[in-house]
Image 1: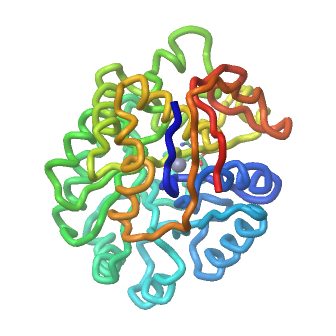
Image 2 (image 1 turned 60 degrees about the vertical axis):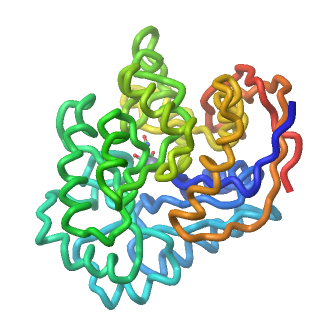
Length: 336
Ligand code: NCD
Ligand code: ZN
């Protein structure tokens, strides 16, 4: 069996910088036509110059592959309307992190006082710049996303014309919010469709499956799966592929992040096939994002076939992928 995907998009992607950028960028660029690149570098991407310079570094790292890096800016409440207007043409979205909630988010937002956020968010709303949000509170780790839902609701209500993307949703509560607020959208990762907390910590601890937000309960995974398999028009694939060097993962104080970019399409094909929903994969990995963000990615046809493929144990001796050393049911035949 063979399927063909047109211009797959990864709408939540960490490409990092320096050596890691050089290792992982071609691994996304090989099979994806574009990706929404997260701004949580050290220091974070907060100026037009930094956005443009990072895009240049990505373009160098991608080599000959056809791949559009859609850029983001790290949200700060003190952005002025004039600054946002100036930077608008260089970015597709602005990403908001609660301070300290995940990797390299120390400069994020520390309170969700709507009046304090209003000038920047109103300007974004007027300029048509979407807001992507890492929606977790500082509460108990399993409850962080559910506890964040009232904040999503306040944002969605106060800024009705602002497109708000709930990034890497992990709970049935977030799925339910999609149908209650017109301006709420979501990305769903590969790993949250496959795993619950059991796969991370139910047996021997699996550091390569540890990420933020942590994988949740079976009923949450079911809700995500149902939404993704149906290619709900308000959800997009966003891998949240977040590479860390092996020594930062297989260590006390394991860094959060699952590296999935080079196997994402193969594993998605397997999942959609297992559930008899292959016909919805195109919408989930490309068409929904094109419509929601209003983008036209470069043309790229990716052909996959149902033939076992062994996921490498490690890439460039540095970064260990999800499913390392395991066999997936689908492989990429060609991408061009
Ligand atoms: C991401 C990273 O490593 O940058 N980590 C993760 O666990 N997902 C940051 C993020 O998206 O939260
Ligand atoms: Zn992320």
